Length: 194
Ligand code: GDP
Image (cartoon, rainbow, N blue to C red; front, side):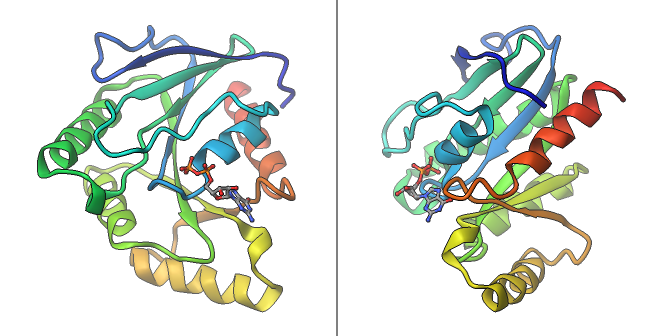
C-alpha cells in the first residue's frame, strides 16, 4: 500500500462528530506511551501527523486521519487509567464501545501492546471488554527493536498468556526499524480488494 496523502480530518467524542462512515476504517488503541503516535506516523510515513495527547485532564477524543482519500485511521485516546478519574475512565469506555459497536465502516481494531513491558492491567481490561463485546482484535506489539531474538519469542508467549488468548493475531512492530509496517500496509491493500 502506497501512502500518497495523509491528513487530519476531525476529532470527536460521539457519532455526530465523526466523519461519514464511507471509507474503510482502522482503529488504533493503546495506553499512553505505548508508542501509538510514533507507529501511526511510521505507517503514514509522516513525522508529525499523530501527536501524543495523553495528559490527564485533557479532553479525550477520537482523531480521524484520511489516507489517500481511501481509508481512515482513527487514533483513540491513550488510556492510562491510574492517571485518570473514574468519570474519565467511564467516559472513555463508553465512547470506545459505542464506537466499536456502531461504526459500520470499521474494518479492524488494532490494539498496541509494548513488546518489552507486556500487557498491563489496563491493556488486559480493554482487550477483554472488546472481546466480550464479540469483536476481533489484532495486537500490534510495539518497540520490537528493544528486544533480542530470544526475548521476542519469550514475550510473545507471555503476552498471549496475559491476554488469555492463544489464537490472538500479533504483529511485532518498530517505529525505529520500521519492522511490521509493510505487513500493516498489506492488510490495508487486502481489505481494499476484498
Ligand atoms: P504514545 O503516547 O503511545 O503516542 O507514544 P509515543 O509514540 O509518543 O512514544 C512514547 C515513547 O516511546 C517515546 O519516547 C518514543 O520515542 C518511544 N518509542 C515509540 N516507538 C518506539 C519504537 O518503535 N522503538 C523504540 N525504541 N522506542 C519507541
